[in-house]
Amino acid sequence: MRRGRMGGKDVEVFALFGDPVAHSLSPAMHSLAFEEMGLPARYVPFRVVDLRAAIQGVRGLNIRGVSVTIPFKTEAMGHLDELDESARRIGAINTIVNRDGRLWGFNTDWVGLVTELRQWTEIKGRTFAIIGAGGAARAAIFGVISEGGTPLILSRSARRGKRVASEFGCGILPLSEFNSVRADCLINATPVGMAPDVGLSPLPGLDLARFELVMDLIYNPFKTRLLRDAERAGCRVVPGAGMFVHQGAEQIRLWTGMEPPRDHMREIVLERLQAHDGD
Ligand code: NAP
Image 1 (spheres, rainbow, N blue to C red):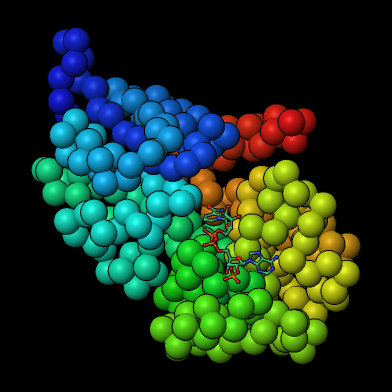
Image 2 (cartoon, protein in one colour; image 1 turned 30 degrees about the horizontal axis):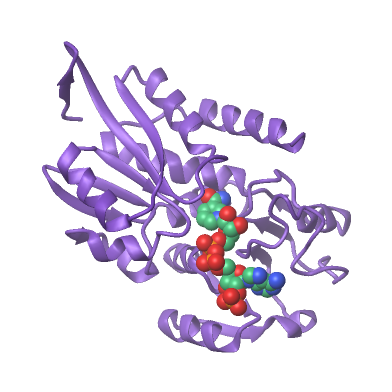
């Protein structure tokens, strides 16, 4: 990592761009990682009011890297100098890397997803029904395909779902036909069930027992209503917190070229999620 100097000490500045950012777990997770890695770096959350100006600020202030979150993951692509091929295919970035003044866009959500999923199941040769057709679903579809698996999109909106299916060359069914879906695993890539709406599920009362594994990309709450229903139906369940940690760890690898302390990052995320449960 190349460093600028500040107050006699080398300090690198990293940022989070989103709106809202107040409840984000990224500042705690990244700050802990930098500290444990012995890097004199600061990670600062910004609630962005003008994305173009914010990205100009990255150049002007020599901010070394940025995490990009809702609602800027797609819009940010238009303000960068270069795009990684996977980000281009997914159609969204969540990471900016400042390489000598040229701003590169990457997507580490898909890497986070497959890194977590691989710890639970073989991806190659298996079928993954994915609910949703937004940014997270696109990252999941790309990740599953990259690892040799087969995604099947379950979308409530036919138009958006069909467009995504034709782009990635995969199957699609309306969510209303859920009962006829045959797949090894199920992935929720919608925000349904996310705090504060923790009583909601995208599939309330529907039979989940035929899936060996159910993953929810939502990480707050740690265990969503969907995962609790799936557990009761006898499925193994994968909370989104692991993906969140791995996508953040990949950001640090891209920014610094160094491997961050994933276990400790996971610990602080779980600790903060438990604290949020009491909100
Ligand atoms: P998004 O771009 O807004 O897409 C949301 C998708 O969910 C859309 O396809 C939408 O359908 C669908 N949807 C919304 N409400 C629905 C409902 N009631 N029934 C069926 N489908 C519904 O959001 P996103 O960026 O993909 O994020 C989705 C979730 O993934 C969020 O909870 C986010 O926190 C999570 N996520 C987690 C990680 C992680 O690291 N664990 C990373 C990224 C995202 P329409 O197309 O019809 O609108």
